[in-house]
Length: 467
Image (cartoon, rainbow, N blue to C red; front, top):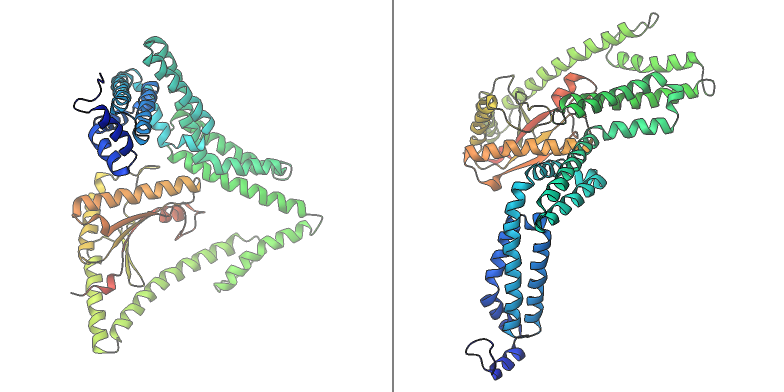
C-alpha cells in the first residue's frame, strides 16, 4: 500500500504529476510547502551563513534546488518534502555554526569589515583573495569541529585582511604619486632632475611610513602625497627642459622663456616690471595688484546687483526683485561672514558653508557645527517648495577615487543631518560628491586648497517660489 501524502490516492498522485508542470498549480504547491525553508534561508543569510558556515549553507542550497527541480518536473510531494527537510536541517546547522563562528572569529570578522570598507577586494585583489581563502578554511575547520585549527587559520586570515586593508589605503592615498614617480624612473628623469625626483620619493616614503604607523590618520599622508605628486610632475618638467638645452636653445634662452609669463601677467595687470635683478619684485607687485582687483571686483558685483534692483523696469519686475532681495537678505542674516557665503547661480541659491570643516579624511559632523546647520535649516525653510542638493568638494590632494568617495560621504552626512532634524521628505533633498572637480581656487596653495574643500547647499529654483 502506498504510504505517501495522507488522503492522496495513487490516482491522485498520478493526476498531481500531470498537473504539477502547470505554472499555476505548481505555484500553489510551492506556496504550501516551501515557505518554512524560505524563512530559514533568510535567517541563515542574516546570520552570514554563506561566509561563516559555507559547507552547511552550500548543502542546504543543493537540497533546495533539487526540491525546486522535482517540483518543476512534477515529482511526488514526498520527494520534494524530503529534499526540503534535508535543506532545513542543513540551514539550522549553518545558523548554529554561524553563531559559534561570530564568537570564535570575532577579530577576523572585524578585520574583514575594515578591509571591505577600504575597498581591498577591488584595489588589492590578490591580498584580498588570500585572506578570503584562509578565512573560508577556518570556517570549514570549525564546521568540522576542529576548533583549534580553525582559530589558527582565522588568526592568519586576520593578518591577511589587515595587510589587504593597509595596502588598499595606501593605493587610494599614494597610488597617483607612486605612479608618477614610477613613470619618471622609466623616463630616466633621475638623470636630468635627480634632486627634485629624490624629493618626490622622500615625500612618498614619509607618507607610507606615516600610514604604517597609523593607517586611519590620513591627513598628513594626504598632504605628503600631494607634495610628492607635485614634485614628480615638476621633476618630469625640469628633465624635459634640461634635455632641450643645447638642442633647441641655450641656457639664456631658457631663463628668458621662464621670465616671459611674469612679464605677461604684469602687463595684463598694468604693473611696472624690472627684471634686471630677477623677477621676484615684479611677481610680488603683480600678486598685490591682483588681490586689489579681486576685492574691487566683489564690491562692483554687489553694486551691479543693487543697480539692477533699482532699475528693474516694470512694476512687476520691481516687486519681484524686491521680494528676491528680501528673501536673500533673510538668508544672509542667518549666517556670520565666517560661516557661509551666499551666492546666486541663475535661479539657484548657493549657501557655501565656509565655516564647516571635517576631520582630515573623515565625514563625521562634529557637534560644534550643529548651530551652523540649524541656520541652514532656517534658510531652507525660506524656500519650502525648492529641491535641495548638498554638494561635496575636496582639494586635489590624493587620488581621484579617494576624493570622490570622501566628498560623497561628507555630502551624505549633511543630507542625513538635515533630513533627521528638518523633517523634510527624503525625496526633496539629494547629495552629490564631486571630489576634486570644480575647484573655485588654485590647489597650488594651502589657502586655495582650503577654499576648495567645501560643502555647498544648493536651493534649486529659489527664484520661482511665490509667497
